[in-house]
Image (tube, rainbow, N blue to C red; front, side, top):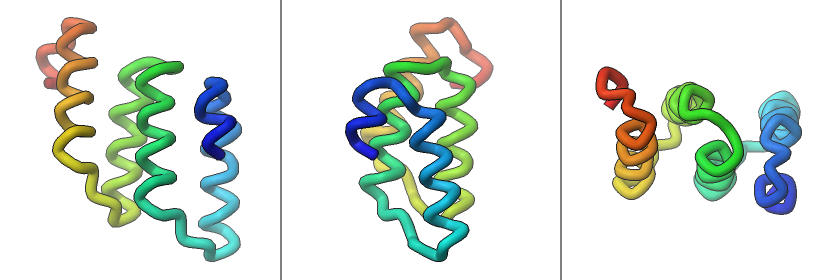
Length: 83
């Protein structure tokens, strides 16, 4: 999963994440964090915000640094309402 995240194949990683959940293999916080970081690097902020909500829905609480990075990305894109 890390290799896919690093190469920007976020869609493939999310497919794997779904398969993990289907097969009752609980992804850990590091997996969610890696995907979130990859979304910031290789996708738009809308996808990252949506995934952040998916993380929270799965019971994974983003850390302060991840929230700070999200605010930074949204501010850089001049999305004041989302910030």
